[in-house]
Length: 422
Image (cartoon, rainbow, N blue to C red):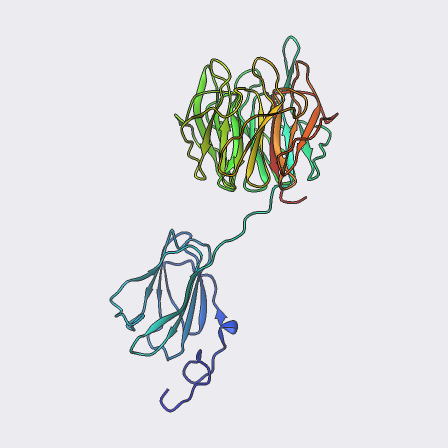
């Protein structure tokens, strides 16, 4: 470009290129290698593999290239820059230059033969928002007993205002002591339980609240397990009872696939409860061994269950739990040697608070779920006789008075949140 005067720092030989706002962007790159052109932008998708980016061999002063982490996977599969015979930040082309930070964006400009390519900006763009909050809930399954069990295959949807709808029948195998959790952000899964014998099956719920047919063979058949969402979009089923109490978990992927058993995750026990807390973690607490127990096991955002922590409120079992307030949890009701009406709030660090008594009709065998973005609902159960009532929990953890007449009275059912749409 001898003798030519550039009026644009993003120019190239013989032309005046568009500024950064008008930079030409190429199609998403998924290959393991790509040779880029000056004054272009490239989305580099390293979901499946790392990528080597070869820069132009004969750039002009002011030539520019922008590279962006398309899928936020550079921390898993980095990009390597081959400066193609030119210096990079005054370092010879023999140096290896890689970028391995999630969400990174690189804007590099050619400064001439002395220093070569120089980053104009090199930043990690934070993913500073999450999924919309869960708006609706679903209660399903359960049983009553009168000389023998009647197993229910019904569901009741809860809208974003906490109103429970009438029964919907025929939603998979009727059973008791199943568990449920949200997964995938806006869907739910029910699994395990007993319909006369222990079952190993799941029923997925789509984001419209439709319960799918049974899928069998999803881990060890058992009852009295608990479940919660973790990791933002996955679920975990933990503990339970076969011919004896078991200490195991099954992780559920973000698309509803139930993983194989993982054993040895705290004190074996059934009839506990679980809920999500802290935005991406879960807590399992209470349950039954030779008697009611007062302990918790925290679950990390990668699905790892921690060792027992004892002394977390009144020992009891057959209670329920749900997320509330966006990042906290509440355990409520249950059975000791009698039905109890109390709650224990859990903060966003997983600390379980002392008992608070007098939170609606004392009962056990109920279920609970989050709804309305930041609230929870407890419903059904038994007081010695089966009840059809609910108690709403505010986003500050206050449980409201009983509301009766909310579907078939039953106990030992399960519930979970679903749907981003109100």
